[in-house]
Length: 456
Ligand code: UD1
Ligand code: CA
Image (cartoon, rainbow, N blue to C red):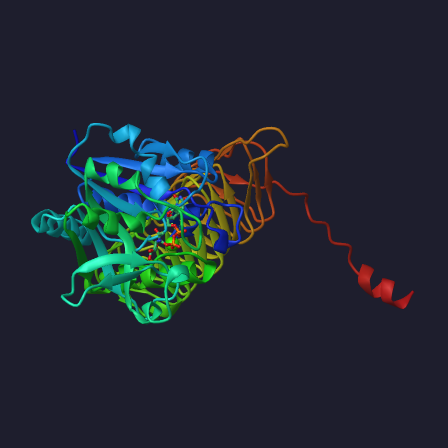
């Protein structure tokens, strides 16, 4: 038996998004709106969660995975009808239902928890969370009597011109006593402008039974903003990003230009790190202290140590140590580990490889499927030839080796510790420790050839 069961409405198509994708799966800050709402329900302490799915139900159910139970609303007959679909899953429950919409991604758990506690204290059968909207267009308006008590909610499409002047809106978030909720829902009608069963009508239904209704106002309209269109999605993305950057700045991170910096919720950054403009940090990216990241860095799931400087780089699923210098114009692909003190210069691509401490990849390298030791110097234009058209092979370059410019290291191959590879070599055999390998054709000089050629 749960004390607080969250019911999250996510069955609507989201017609105004003009999309094939169900609205609640549109992303902001890298994650579907629905995920942000489920997170908020968790943070509020909901010990049971039910997501109502309908349009694109397979996709939405797949996404929900094990995080919540799912009930299907076969036809989208309105928000009241949607909540009714949770009845079987909540049969015989007392406690409170916290009703949320999957399209209000800026919700925060702490505010929901406060709302729930105020609801319990009020003794009301139904509480609705309200807010004063700067532009209330499209929202249901809260109707109050002269004593300030909530008497009902009227939708934009059903409202009189006077009611449309009201700025206090329905956030679509409610706390309702169970089993009262399902009893109220069974009495809804669809006699309204949209011919839908409106959840909002449970307020007047509750009052008609002599039970109290509470309207609890939040000061933070942004937090309860509903996303109905791509314009709203962009506005919500902007607000969420500002919040994340604000929190990071409060924690001691310098963000030079918040307007051109995009950081997702799960990213962590240490003190005194400076984030330069046009930078995107995504997923589970973690950056240490005293780093300088950007301009123009995109990291997705990248771990970075302390004191590292990186500019104009795209990296994903990779790790970079401390005191590394990197950029401009490098690409780190999955399973790459760059150890401490490495220098990665310009136009370098590294994939599925480990680069040992203090090694230099100064210009124009492709390093794939390689294990490079420490103190190695890779000359300009050196390439690990890792693919024979069928299989990928590994290259090993041991500590302190020196690989001359424009060499091809044809894998599988090992370049021994402290060895030299002459510039322009194509290496197909292992190079022993401390040896010099020359893998190129010998030069011949033809004296006077050029002069003769000119005079002919
Ligand atoms: C709803 C409220 C409105 C409130 C606004 C807050 C009603 C009638 N109106 O309007 O008072 O100000 O939210 O954002 O409740 N859904 C279903 N099944 C349906 C219909 C909708 O699951 O049959 C889901 C949608 O997927 C969405 C949520 O319910 O997540 C809200 O639906 P939407 O159509 O966006 O309602 P609004 O018009 O915004
Ligand atoms: Ca909405």
